[in-house]
Amino acid sequence: MEVIICHDPDCAGEVSAAKVAQVCKEAGPGVVLGVATGSSPLKTYQNLAQMTRSGELDLSQATAFALDEYVGLPAGHPESYHEVIRRTVTEPLGLDPARVHVPDGSLAHIATAGDRYEAAIKAAGGIDVQILGLGANGHIGFNEPTSSLSSRTRVKMLTPGTRADNARFFASVDEVPKHCITQGLGTILDARHIVLVATGTVKARAVAAMIEGPLTAMCPGSVLQMHRFATVIVDEAAAGGLALGDYYRQAYSEMPAWLQVHV
Ligand code: F6R
Image 1 (cartoon, rainbow, N blue to C red):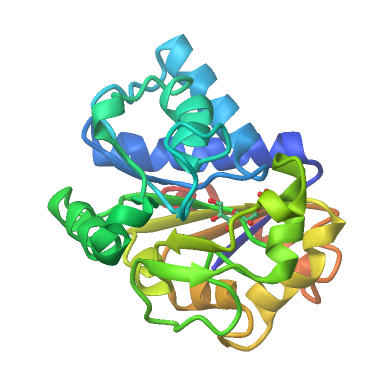
Image 2 (image 1 turned 180 degrees about the vertical axis):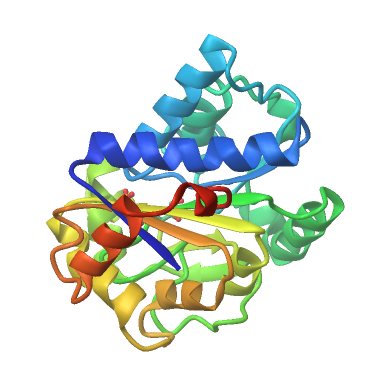
């Protein structure tokens, strides 16, 4: 795992966007992105949007797969991840909406939604770079603690803590759906590169557990210890619980040029 400690969230947004753009350029115009919702990657998307506006990056032929979706929200609900991805990713990054996929959270089709999503990712050739945030309880996607480390896209129940965290997007916590459909930890591990962004003191414990704790389903993010090309980008506040913080800072600031070729 490559750990990059940035001084603030703006810097984390710039560094994460640079990492994602690097993979996009290596993968070519048909790059397949994995995209997260939530606050953490918003600055990443803003920087990527700026790169597409300036002509540095062209994502018009890219494909994207969202990590997760709430189950049972009416189509077009502003907080459904279909809508959030359209507002924060598809439009600003200039993606073709026909190639942007979000798990189907409609109750009528939920029984087959996971398998259909897995098949769509496979048909697209797999995800080149998966952008992730990290829950305060260590979740990635909506894989809550005790999720199977080899899980695939399926329905999960959100923990009360996650529903409380996401209540800020709804009128009250009671309106936050109890169920979601999420890529599994096994699905996420299949991505060729992973770029995770976490900022703020509220994430410090989860960041330390993910990077330095044991590999355990109690901290689903710790499964990234098994990935060959996972980059974790945090700000100083989120890095507060790391035992080896100085080592990560030194490794990044003194990285020789010949090593700066891959994520
Ligand atoms: C979002 C997702 C979640 C969030 C996590 C952090 O699609 O799957 O894992 O990344 O809950 O959320 P924020 O970034 O809002 O703190």
